[in-house]
Length: 327
Image (tube, rainbow, N blue to C red):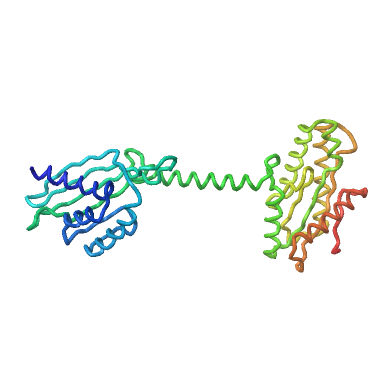
């Protein structure tokens, strides 16, 4: 048998013993085929060996795992390169897959590339270097760095971030949903950031839906949320109910008259928008409760409760807004 055939057959037998029929006897034959100066690099992060004793120890420990799983070789190929009278290289590929029991999912599928360096020693050809690795599944043809893998990872992260953002929003109006509004407002309060809380309610909104239909009502909700985004740009805005909205305005230096001026300007613009959609009438209004966050307050629930009470008073008064008190 020529050297090429001998070393290719030896390499093939090595993989058969290691993958298809692992046993103490076969592992001993593997060790016999290896030089005491063997250097081995595997696919695992820890699999870098320059000590034959460590290889022997770990391979023996590996036997207990190897006997619990069975593989089948789906494809294999071997090539030989003579590097000198006493040195030869066998390289190739090996596709091995776990043999699954009935209704069991395949857990291991290895498309491995390997290179095995042999040296002729006193007692025959011995393996002095073995390297095997699995290529990236997503690496494209002609791609020398796995850009496709990193790109897919970036796309996955971006998609996860997009879903995260969407999960925080009210999809009709594009402002925060109730849970997210409370979360971010609470965080702003706990950070000690001064501000004001507004709680809005569209007056007679049920009559709008009953008279003009829910599609028209949805348009009105979108127009109102658009006004909130315009007048409270950069603040925390949320839809907290069917026709209820809230804003946590981060305004540490604002004066009461600043809040009133903003509310009245917004109320006038809303009235004009509502008349364009619904026609002239006297029911196209909204009410709002306003409360200033105080340094001694640390509970968003308490702040919201007193502002909500102020909203209730506003709805039963002639004015569009009502300030909350400490109680």
